[in-house]
Length: 619
Image 1 (cartoon, rainbow, N blue to C red):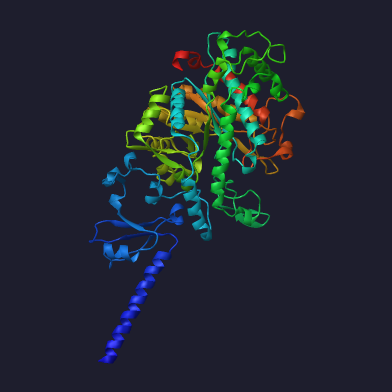
Image 2 (image 1 turned 90 degrees about the horizontal axis):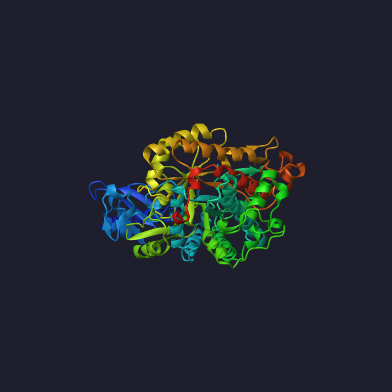
């Protein structure tokens, strides 16, 4: 009897030890997500979620069944320093503690910044962090979550109003900047060249349409600049890995993730780079605000011909620059168009005059980037109480087209005013779409030959079910050869559904080609051709081109070929590309090509009667 008792006791201890080992194994799994079905006990799927670095990566849950556990026993079994939370699948969404039925899970009222993770949706293009870096990733995200906002919600709200004006044909948008920002360019020289070229492009787009239309009563065209800056440190790639010099390594995915150097150790994704990216974005934003927020800041760039490199322009564009300088600096209605420009005998306008100060209101600082790294975007998303949103609405709004959210709180991404969903992440049921449908920032969606019109319409309705002007920007990128066939179907579908979208054109990505030496480049004449075709085609469907989305820099790089210059030494050809290639990824327009394109697009806008009807009271 004593032997039998000892045997039973030993068996009991063995079973207890095995049970503990099984539980510990489940706790140590990297996914940290367990999903199991307890039929007949709980009447639904139970999710066990632990707030760990693996959750931040959006990894898939491990699925298995433990039918012997009761709900409380299961909670106790998984008890650890990091608390576990059990939530019934039909109760995943809560609003201030109020459980919502399953059919309300897609409503905005029950959205939260981590919905894309809690719903276990597939997140494309996320960095392949090594297991030893997961805790560091969690720490980096927590650090970013505690940083001050990079932009303020009332600024983002104001941009929504500006885009609503674009929808109503009262404004044009220039969205431009680097393909991929680099940390090393966060310096005065690098930032200044980009500030200068965008300010001069804005100057031409505002004034040249009036000059070429020969309508003396036509006011300047209001132009809003949205910079691809202060956060464009991430890049989507077709593959997570590439082979360089016979070595397999992680593909360069932007300075936010890894380094550009073709070394396996440099290409390993490092979470601390996310924090560095946020700090450099803050430095960039500070520089932009200081340069653009003072009447003396950039006044010289649009006052003297000596600040324009006209040798790299076509004769028509160079003449257009001189005419714009003579046309008047701030008040187009009171200047003599035939007066000489500065450097030709005219005294410079006063940068502290009331006209100059008023012009600063049109020089608002707006930034943008592709919303790619969802753990970063979630960390930068902050709730804003409804009363604060309404205060911004009352004090800042100049248009009633975009109204405040009716929910108790609105969520704004504080890392940029404007974000867009890229070509590789716009799956209708994907994690990116789930995240973007909940934020109140204006959202861009890249559309091209890779998406059919029905899916595009469904995507617009999912991200903006209220159909608000100024919320959704469709960024067309078909390429010069396919724009007529592809955009026609999409524009017709948008018109049929009466969707209030703003149209931008991205003439860069659809026109990328490789030279015989394997070097990527883009042709200037094809870039302008796509803009021209898009502008004409949208008119056929009672819509209009509201802006352009460009990749450029203000330096004399040799990355895109062609342009307006007439002398061989100023024209970039295929064989010139290696001379001054600096891009971390795709080819960008250089200074001369950027100014030339601004002039040619201005000539295109001069033909629009709708813009000529703008009055001061409408603005």
